Image 1: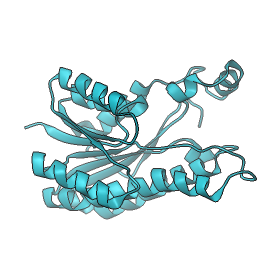
Image 2: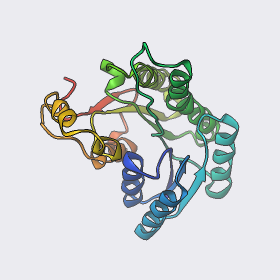
Image 3: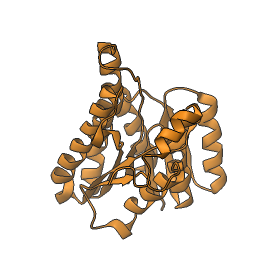
Length: 244
């Protein structure tokens, strides 16, 4: 019987890379998306082509009731959830002087409250299984801050704190909880940056190149595996030496 992975924000970017890499590692995949259904269905077809099952849910992670319904549906079909990857996230960048309260709370609600909602929803099934694995995707910006990203930085710093606390609570239930902090990863978002901005970013990175979504996905697969069975409560940067 294959293990079952639930990945939030799995239709594109880092989330898609995680979904595909887990599928190659013989996980049945469930992922949610909040936007483009066409992209979600395309990703699902790629997963199924690998030879595993794939289900998609259009679900706003800010809505605990919808999240709970999604988890209940997964348990009804598969009987278990072995791995949760909290990857959903948004940005609404602006200087603090110009940042609206809604822009602050929207980012907190998706990035931090959404992570809480998913962890809360899978807790009972994982406790019943007496096994599980939770991997939260934060950001190096949650560690070092960034101009114009007070909301994003606060949300991702919260994810780090949440990871450490839940790891301490869930360890006796044989549930490991870890956190990955990507740096600048080449996605649709970074592709839109100007050459000048990219050059400024590369100056901060020891390896002098942007990361690939697969760099994050590979670490997810390692942390999900038995090779990482003695690792929990850790925060691991994937940033090319941007933060040392």
